Length: 416
Image 1 (cartoon, rainbow, N blue to C red):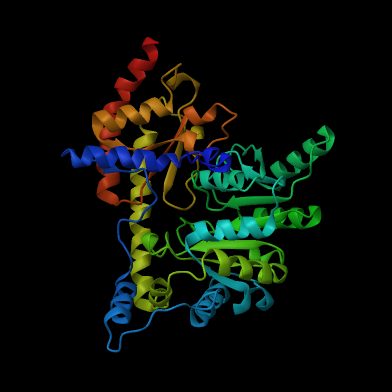
Image 2 (cartoon, rainbow, N blue to C red):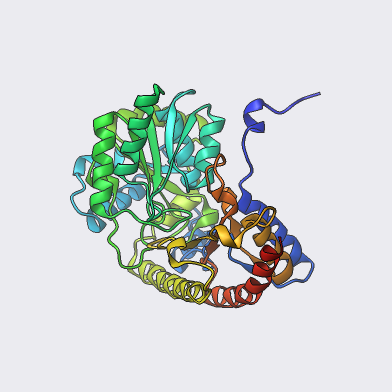
């Protein structure tokens, strides 16, 4: 009888999708569920992008939409290069040559390509102790070992925290780090590295021979703080981005990477064999992503995210049991990450149980922290994430229901 590989058996589920599945089950039973679990923009693709896809499919003339170059349509890669020129400071022209830009099958395809190109089985890769779970799951499936680096009180992993891990490993006689994967703005915390913090992290990685992978998929969605790209500070960094978040094209499965010269041929070979190319219809439509009409529509989405963020933070600030220091800064992206603290949990009554009860009783879907936290620690059952990608009204009504639910939760904890 066929059996699953040990590799696949070792991969944890993406728990937010488990929450989504149960939320959809309740919805199919007639319940009105408020979705604050997934990071999926409510808006769908911008109108010019959707129209470009229809035109390519129907014509006249109809486009063939066959295979592209493994690295993607050249006009799209040229537009991505121009995006870096116009958006960021001091990005070297050498770093954004079209031959160093890879259009990928979503950022997920980018992660798989980057991890496979950069690391071998047994290599140790650093991740933030609070971070995107698929880093951990994909790297584990590829046989890499993980170093969970604790984030600081500002919910960040900076050069200071990475230096501490490097020193600890040296003193303990452990293998040195081969790589670091980090997102800024972060999923789940929303914390964003300042340009000088990103610069110092890039310099440390270059000095120590650590391959830095900078996940920048939430760029474009920030609330007053300056965004920076690792390309401004290192010629060795791998930058991963996506059309799913700011560009609202999550189901189109399209992303990109900017890679150092040394990885061009390895990534080319991997892309040819793993994916051939990213979806051609998505690439064709994405050529419209930087049109003025598209950007105006996307910036209007960011203003909605800003409003939803404000609603959630204001509602949380009115709950005295939740300390402000236990709420991550939400500098960018569309998440608020909350630590319940020691006094709002009890054995069997942590954030996993709270999120389950909130969904079953109030039809509000939040994601428990065990999807994002170091599995060796205890914070996964103390923390939870609220996504506000689903619209202002959804955020408002979800927080009203959460406020109604909260006293009943505190009562349950106190009874234990």
